[in-house]
Length: 169
Image (cartoon, rainbow, N blue to C red; front, side, top):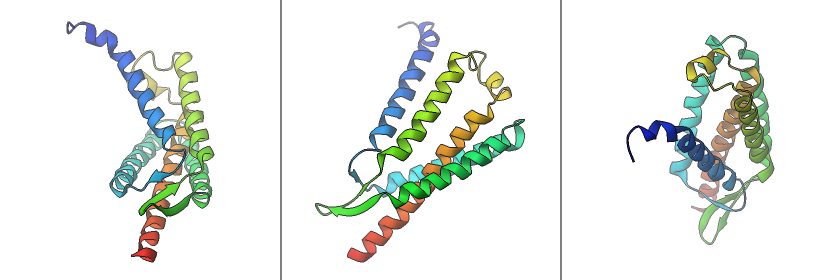
């Protein structure tokens, strides 16, 4: 493949990569999941970094602070509610958890739907710099809700799994 063809394929490769990430995210919302502490720590670190970027955006992008604050509050509340509906248990000698599939799935679909809507309206056509200047409070709010949700859910799951290990070990 010539080097000149790669830039033409970039949108398709990025779309396929995002699709794969979304598929994996949604797949982890259903059924019994094995407890993987290293992945949970990685997700927590990633969510903290994303939270920092969202707060940076809220501070410096005009008009998105209220959307980010509302999204974080709503996502954290929903994360706490989802954590209450997540079961942790031993299954065949391994620690596992069974998440409630509705909470994370609905939030993920809302964000994907919002991004698809913005994309269909041409919001990302002019590149990342132009998109940052026209940042939508609603899109940033959905992103903040996802970060708040997954940050609280993963932190709570980490804490509950440590308690599960302490009761058995």
